[in-house]
Structures are given as C-alpha cells and as structure tokens.
Image (cartoon, rainbow, N blue to C red; front, side, top):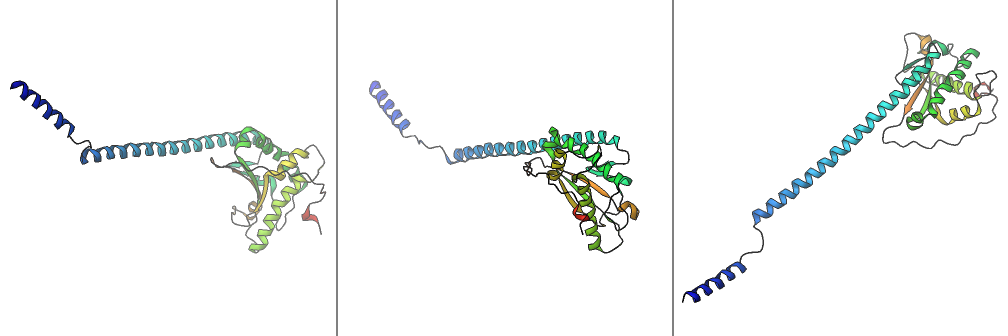
Length: 240
C-alpha cells in the first residue's frame, strides 16, 4: 500500500509541476520593462553628455588655437608701431587716416599697407591660418558729417582704395609679389561702415581696419576660388 501511495504522490507531483504557468507575472513584466527603460535612458544620457563634451572640447581647441594665431600676429606687429590689434581687429590708427570727404591714401600710407599685409598673409598660410582663418574684411569708416548714403559710399571707396594699393603693381621693395596679390584676391573682402562706429574725433573716425574672421569649430573651410592676377594698371576709383 505504501508503494502505491508513493507512486501516486510522484505522479501527482509531476502533474502539478507540468501545470505550473509558463508566463511571468504582470508585475514581473512591468519590472523588466522599467529596467529596460532605465538602461535605454542611461545610454541616451551618456550619448548626449559625450556629444556636449566633444562640442565643448572642439570650442576650447578652437579658442586656444585662434588665441595662439593672434598672439603670433601681435608679436610680429611690434615691427609696425602705431598699428594695434584689438581682439580680432587690426587698427591702423594714425598710420592710415583719410582727409575729409576723400578716399585717397598718400604714397607713404600705401607703402605701409604693402609692407604690413604680407605679415598677415604669411600667417594665413601657416597651419593655424589655413585651419581657422576664414577671411579678412577691409572696413572703411567715415565721420558723421554728410549724408548717410554719401558716407556709406565713401567708406566703401576707402576699403576699395586699400585693395587698389595692395593689388596694383607698385615699385619699390615693398611691392607685393604675384603669390601675395593672388592670396589677397582670394582672402580679402571689402565692407563700408559709414559712421556706425565713430571715434572720439572726426579725424580718428576717417580710418580703415582689417577684421579677421574665423571658422566655427563645426564649419568646413570653403575652397578658395582660383583667381588669377589681372593686368590692371589703374585703380577703378581713378578712372573718369
């Protein structure tokens, strides 16, 4: 009898084991889903944090390398007293003033420009310059006298006069070579600021500046256009 009862108990136990439910309970399912959600959220947050960290690293690298570029420029500008670097702006100060209602530079001012600009071009060709320097904007300024449109035109002519001084053939040791003139055409742009940035006096306001513009960390440099050096021997401002 005991053997029969034992076999019966074994059969009942096996049947109970086979009838136990296969699926996990609803609470266990919700717990598993919550764990998966937290894992996915953690991975997403880590990815965002890494992206922000990488962006900050690129900005820090850009700032440090542009600062190094400007420091090298500042050091070389010591050979040109009176020309100052304010941030990313080269201010010629008294070395390149214009007469009232005039866009002309005298011979010594033009010679100074031709001596100085190759310093900028040399740095534009080095690795940091090729990596970050986007363009050089020649900005002409006018004082507050006269109408707005007249002064705007005058300030643009002053910017163009600078490019005429750099690009047109000149005699003397300070004349730019063909490679420098070609890079000026590719890299330099003109802008007129009229009297939007006045100095303390009208004379100081009649000036030119070179503003250096740099690429953003995620900005790719545009290929510089292949511009040859033409044979113009006369500035368009001097044509009738």
